[in-house]
Length: 301
Ligand code: ATP
Ligand code: MN
Ligand code: MN
Image 1 (spheres, rainbow, N blue to C red):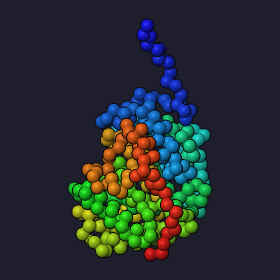
Image 2: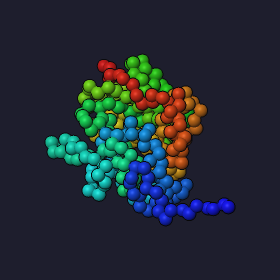
Image 3: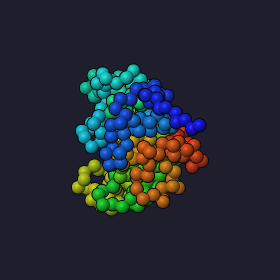
Image 4: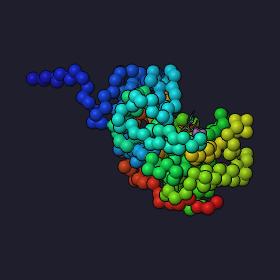
């Protein structure tokens, strides 16, 4: 006799043991995903996200009423996060010290989601020594109307120029309009050297090909060009972390990609929070094995 099993009254507590309230609340109205689905996504990708996200001061994009309502960046504790959302004191420009947030595990990620977090942005250094950057990001921001083809060729050219300097780099789809070129670095230089290198690298590219690239933020100077946003590499700046969901239409995610895959892509929103399983499988695949890791020092420029 066929007996349909009775559903439990409450969904089982997720393995990360974080109670998620309002699981049915729609966070992405265009595509319909709920807060529960967002939490399940982060629970699923925690093991591949944490190697990049753990122990980094983070800025959270919180949208407690869903992505279509008010969202805000949060980098300091408001006292209401759970105990797995940890604090690291960081010296401010004025000499005072402020507590920044970081997570170490899936519980930390999920406690942020419980508080309405959609996006995780991270510093380029880790909480153990926030003054020693270990990751450089070139965030390619195309002017409106530019083709994604232009972004892709820019990313590859940046990879090649970095390679000329002896640096291995990796491509990440931002989940928005652009591509981030990520350069893992062995800590050992300070923020000044970090920022200086990235500024000079971006300026050299824009000097060499001024019709393609600009290294200045100004929208007016970006007309028809790609802004190589090196400003992500200043002390205190953040960049969206690999596997972070984006608070954008369709629930896209920031996704690592192999250089040889980039050619075929039409835009930077290939994956969404519905693709957790696929992303896990990809991360274990040959083409993405080792993505984001390299033992290399910042060269002189
Ligand atoms: P896209 O590909 O659409 O440009 P993106 O994540 O690169 O997506 P940007 O606007 O270029 O978005 O911003 C780059 C990074 O700068 C973000 O990922 C984020 O970490 C940081 N950022 C942007 N705006 C703010 C802000 N208001 N407060 C704090 N950090 C910000
Ligand atoms: Mn960008
Ligand atoms: Mn930018």
